Amino acid sequence: MPPQYLSWGAPPPTWYIDQLMRHENRPYYVGLLKAAELQGASHHAVMEFQIITNKQIPKMRVGRSMLVFYYRKYFSQVSNALKDFKTDAGTMKLSSPELTALDLLRYLHVAGSIDAIATVLSDLATRMKADKLASLARQFERTVIQRLGYLLERLGHEQVAGPLESYLHENYKPLPWVMLEPQNRKEHAQESEPPLVRSTRWHVIVHRYPEIDE
Image (cartoon, rainbow, N blue to C red; front, side, top):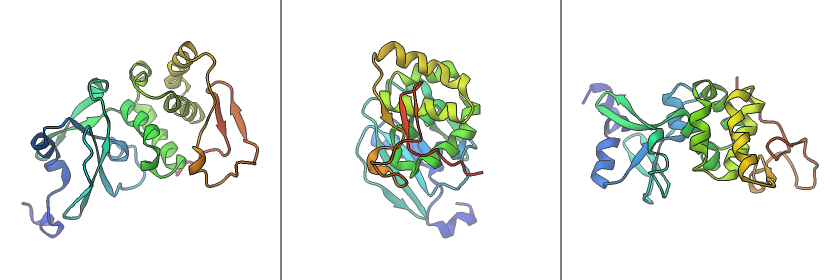
């Protein structure tokens, strides 16, 4: 154990998460905001070490680190979007930029706000491939695809978002409307207030534009 970690009470999770999940005999990947941070697309340090797995596991504190587990039922659907990320103690499974983006819109509560998600996407989008995103999006809920498509367009990444639009309009006729921020999460708009815009491309109702943390 390097001396700098002695005061932490444990080594960093990147050193042991792969062995821990092998012991649990569960598929997993490091995802969400933690994956974005490891890919250089987070403007702030992430306080939780976020893991996606197919078992309901309570969060656990290991030394200074908080490991938080999020549930995904089917892993075969996203297995091609995982990569081996080199760590100081070996490797661990990490979500690709495309999977990270989709997951952030699926697990909206994890990021804390649509502003935080938009801020991450502003950097992450430059690492995403349109064809990979469109293929992977088929494994996600329609509302996730709509919100992600709108945000990518809003952030100036229409080329990445384009295939998502094609998929939606080919498979959902008519395409239902969805709010950019779910009603129970809106902090800046009352239900009675008219939306700023209705995106006819994505069928997304926007009550306020996301603010990017520069």
